[in-house]
Image: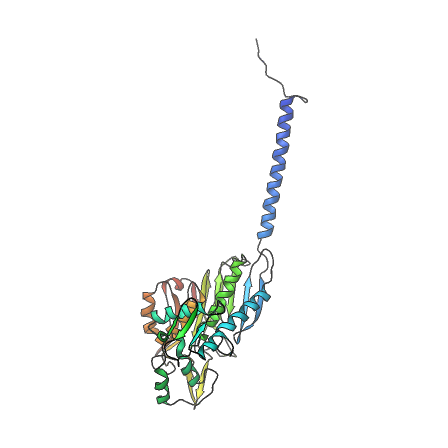
Length: 357
């Protein structure tokens, strides 16, 4: 005897169930394919959004990728106005200017405390090579709002008696002076801090790939999606002029800040002698060392900015020794020797830099 099972003929319930299941599976597959296509469309690399403007007596350039194609220029400009209201010495009504005119100040905006905190840390770790209280000396040498002839050594010595960031104290609410003559200039960190503020804002909006540059320094976050590789930047050759600028090296960056301090164009000529704009807090005089530029790469641009100034003050030999003690910092130094121009790069950044012979 042969036992036969049910035959799946049209009208049979098993046949109809299988047909219905196949239809559902096909619809689900089509829906999944459509969802993947939509996701790829939304996340496909587009032309970057570019925002440019002026701030802090310089320019800014921002490139970022946004699947929603949003333009944040108005918000960025508004943020930079507020940062300037806190830290710009050239604004007589800014928070830092009002503090300089008094002995204490209660913070009104959230933008003065962070650069003070970074300044205090780098001042301590650099043993005073970075010191924002050099403002009276900056003005004396004609790099601030005053223009003067070569200052007298007795005047320099007099001002040095109240130079020193240890004469500044602050908490979460306010900042005050231990010596009423102290003046603070956050210009050495201001552009880097402005770049940090912009970067943090764009990150809060979900931007994951951007290049923020403010006055030649800033943050490289993620990658250049259009080219599918890290962001690439040039480091000026010391022989550049304001009219003829060319690069000594190129560096590729991902999730790193960048800043370069150098005496390329910013100097004063007094009685026929050129003086660097970088003041040595210890001597009160512009630095006269063989170092020509210091490029620093760190997690945030405020830190990199402060350290670039500190390394310029130290000179390349002390700077190299210090960098060995701070593995969290990456740097590229250009300095002069009797045989010509020489360079130094820390281990990690040396793998990211291409030096032009």
